[in-house]
Length: 456
Image (cartoon, rainbow, N blue to C red; front, side):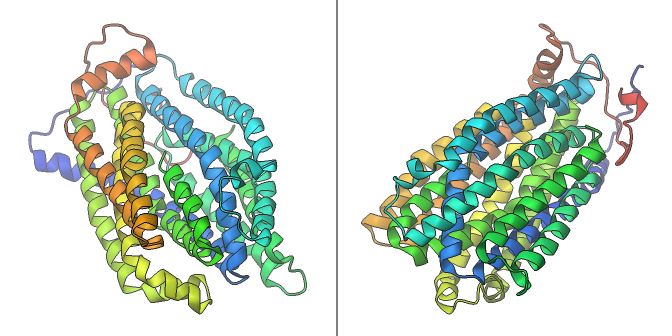
């Protein structure tokens, strides 16, 4: 079926308003979903924080192993899937192409997960890189990794299925997924941690996470019908040399960063799919407008996040842990955490634009250079040579994310959008010499149910 022709609006400000309305309609469900997911992480962190600093340190070591060996591959391949699905939904010849991409990604993920699980069950290879922490910390880390082997495949499959829905503009189901995870997490923590009669102590926390992720996967299957992580963990390797208390502080900072910047990653998915859809529909200038609108909206939102974090820093630290020493270590680092969160949020949106263009390689190069060749050496010099400890590490981390935002912002502004639209047709249809055509994406796409027939 031929697609409807668009009438160009002669007033640029009306195009901006229309695009802002569209992105707000799509971004609000994702922002709500990201906030719910952040609440789930904070509740898990709080449960550990009230058990003790060593369980926090053990979780930090476990996440070090997971983030160095599992998540980089998952997010790398997931980013490729995001580009292919969003562009294929509007630009591919044949409506089944998007489903084929998702199926292939799931099988590749699960095959790779077998090798990853073997490493996680024998994590001493990574632990030997560290200045040996307390035996109790290592015990907590090994326990967490055992549970991670169980629920990481659930995260992998759910990520693929969620990408299948997002590429079609179906954002609201994500709220259902994350709300399911939050409810399952709260119920499981009450049963296995907070209730004295049935409490399992530390083991109850990863068990609750496992139950939550399994519940989310089941709901996702029903509804669908079917590189920056590494830097924070290199910092964790360094912090392990500073002692268990510093490691616990790093665990809180890392988890807070992930929770507070998660909204940016979710909105990055929105703009990635929006840009990919528009390029697939051969509307390069509208795709560029979409990118500019989303970045400006995210700058405003991240400024609000910064103000709230600075005003509520004491309440935030006290909510996570009741350890006065840990709170005193956290407070001087909150301003740096604010800088990292703000620029992480902005860089997530810019990375989403590049993913929508199919330029994951450029984003990866920027992150490798900014983090590993610039931020890591700076952080280690400040931490150890100048003896600034955790403060120096987080100065390096902040500098890295500022560099990423600046570089990716330049890449987006300097993009050849007409050329990206042509390359999109080559990518999804194998067309060697693609010609720009007028085949716009309809703004009204359903949020639940089958896709519009005009887009099939």
